[in-house]
Image (tube, rainbow, N blue to C red; front, side):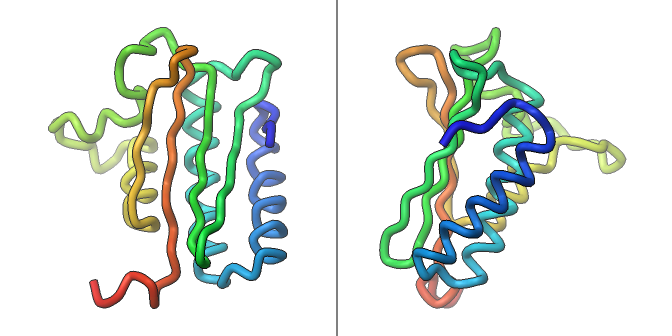
Length: 140
């Protein structure tokens, strides 16, 4: 689905995601975590990247055995050969405890069972996260 690059589009995308996952019979726990992850990934795309041609940010959702894979695609940035700029927390620098930004992907990592990014052949960035039900994860 295409998401308009405006702040209010994030809440609309969360609502649409919730309705879709409810229709698919996904558990409430997975829905809530997927909504938060999508909010963070879309916020990052709005803040740090350009929209895709046509002016939208892409959101794809795939379900398999009660688990959900969400993927956000943006038009890339001026640094399209590097990791998305919002992923710099992994570069070993100390985070400022008072900073207002910079913890989003830590949240994504905590809420999901995996996340990653890739640069597509057209220069766009795709960031994905995988969310599964608590009972599927076993004792962690």
